[in-house]
Length: 151
Image 1 (cartoon, rainbow, N blue to C red):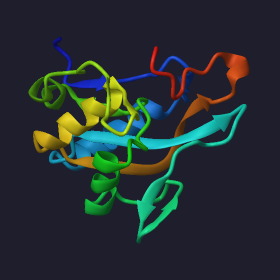
Image 2: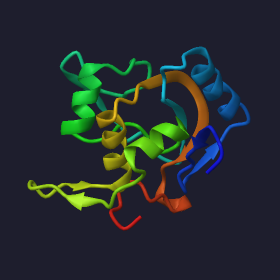
Image 3: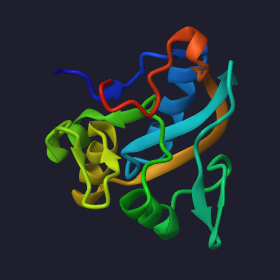
Image 4: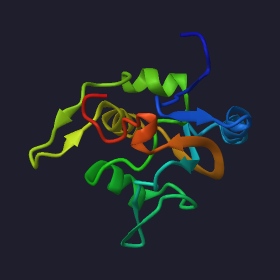
């Protein structure tokens, strides 16, 4: 791969016209940032994501990524959608996507969630962009694969 960044796009998502340039501006403004995750515009369903903030669960949008959010990702599960922008070198350093697996408590940890944890393990810095830059087709009518272990 010869690109400096990877713009992941999940199969039930669409970029809005300004998605790439808006996310790139975050990476250009802070060379220490490795991954940018913006806000989705929900289509056909409600937002299924939640993160711990000041000890309570809430939607993750508008919350800067910090130690509490990292602990949530590691222990509770991911709230960062796959539609994000990441530096290619960070993905290489993390070894890409591992296979998904079942945790001892029976929860499934998908390859995307394990990939995010690998990024953190290698020192990647995450930054939330509090701006809607993509559409998330969360309703089953469009064929959403959110939360499915087979996708």
